Image (cartoon, rainbow, N blue to C red; front, side, top):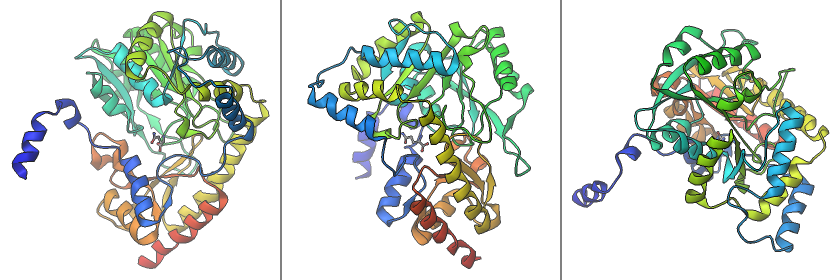
Length: 400
Ligand code: GLN
């Protein structure tokens, strides 16, 4: 048997050996196995807006069932351009600057494949959404990590050290990946921080790839600023976004890139050969979604804020130290109070014995030790789900 496995492994690419399977997706499978409440993978358990679902049904009924233009249905690209203008004051040409992909996940890997050569380096803030590391490796680049340090006070923010960031940039740096509002920390990068990153991008001739999928999910008066809006950045920014989080349709797999024309050209080629195109009827529904009245986004953010404020006190009471998110729909926590050897042992206990799935912190760090006392909870769930999780989590106290 061992010989058979060795023989099979002979065929594998060295690239895949450098990363592990997604822990976030694995935790969803664990939740299903143990009948646990899934606060691991970030997807809503409540319905998507009725008008968007209706638009998808109508698109199928109208037989929009064949390939869309490979880089995206015209209606959707126009709606994306319109939205960037309204929300961020950024003018983009839907004919030459937008590529619709199968989710922002494909948008990110298509972008990296389109811009990276072997030996290039990509700067990534950590903790990071776990796809970015493997994405960089698959595209032949080497990730360089820059730490975001957790707040030391309950109302504090995650921060990076300016000198550490500068030290990560050199002539090998091709791109910096930025995710704001941030998964997993909930950090919303400030104008001042973005300007610092901008200055380094200009000085070292580096591309900014910004994942803005949580752009509408903001709390406590924070503002989302698109990197592409900053002076000097329109020619060196790829903005990534999608339908998943803003419209609660993570399974539709519709995302996109907005980039300068020559970069878009390259992204479109990679995207075309990877997937040909995103689901055609769901792109039409996406065009309808982006036309939704502005009050929808206000309500979305308020509803998520209420969910944050429902889950966080329950976690704190149970003994977690919570790092308050200012955006996105996750809360990172410190688990030192529970005395577990590491995050993996803790999440295993949590899913099996307590009946709640969360993501071990180590999956957001290059060196697992950095996340060994952290765990991430997603709160994009119905009140009943959050309340049930809260009541189960009380069981942790009894263990102590
Ligand atoms: N972004 C979500 C998370 O971090 C899930 C993304 C995914 O699994 N594709 O949980």
